[in-house]
Length: 264
Ligand code: NAP
Image (cartoon, rainbow, N blue to C red):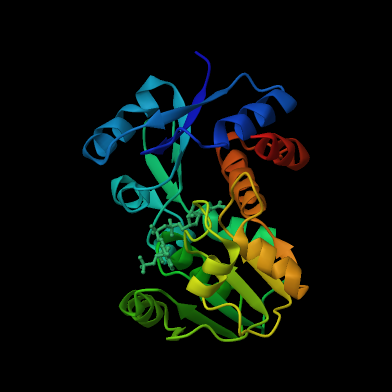
């Protein structure tokens, strides 16, 4: 039977992961297939439990299942436990399920420089903000500030990770957009205003987790102020690279995966 992998989400129609992973399997001559698995929350647990017996070796997990993915697993990596959510499941031959979080390490790989000793501002306290804030803390960032539209969520996350919440964005060396602002077509000025970016001094580097067909408003702002830019597709590719390696044990073809993800 052809080994399978897939992405569990709801919705999942626009995922670029199948293109990225199928290109990678072909590049390393692995006879694997990666498919979209649109699964509503009510069917998530029973679907995951059925996957290992149906030829699946692994799965990525996206909105809204990342918390349930950690709960359904038999074991979890330090990253999945630390973040409190999983985006990668690996199935052992006997059916055991291991949870990992490659969003955190993938973000650090995409960042491409050590955050050690530097001040970081994380915009957003949802699932992505949680993974990014945890990763920055683990890598020794000097200060990690969390801002969120709903301030209580920033305060809760900061308390849990022993970081600081801010009621208004402040200047930082590294600014990460982990909100969904920019996902829908929105005027750049409106997005920059919603995130309180305009008054900030130019950061050294800006990471926008959001990706879209057009340049996102946060990327446009970062380019305008002269920051180095890491876009959401690079973060997607880097988390995918880590998942691929975990499932197959093979060195991931990074350039092939990047090209496939960018082609959509
Ligand atoms: P989530 O858990 O639903 O959180 C959404 C976040 O966006 C919350 O912090 C929310 O603030 C904020 N937000 C939504 N609309 C806003 C607005 N108009 N103004 C200010 N803040 C707003 O989603 P998530 O899983 O964290 O994902 C966030 C984004 O990251 C999504 O666009 C997702 O596609 C992207 N992402 C990308 C990658 C990648 O590999 N590139 C990986 C993971 C996620 P409130 O708490 O106030 O609602």
